[in-house]
Image (cartoon, rainbow, N blue to C red; front, side):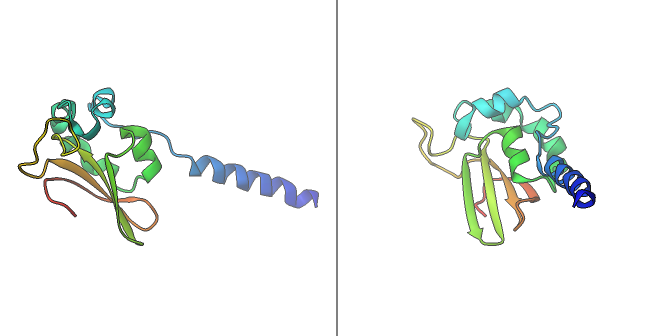
Length: 129
């Protein structure tokens, strides 16, 4: 019994350390501005757009918890089917902002998540998925 205990403890410890994800490296993106600008209402995310575009593909393969720890709770989550979902972060003010009339679809960052909650695509667009 003792021979199985030590390898089991090491295996469980290694699994626990690997399963916990921390914040991602966001380069020059000011994450304080990003997180405080829910739905893009303040226009702070627009100031971070160029810095975000430069590093957007570095988030491919990241898990959903790492995204949340880095960018905060998404403005919107859309479940397409059992195999994919989208995290929306609005760059321009969305229709949920006070005093904003929806003339066109706002610019947003879309993180496409696959069935195992890993980022498979990062897009900056005005189109809905």
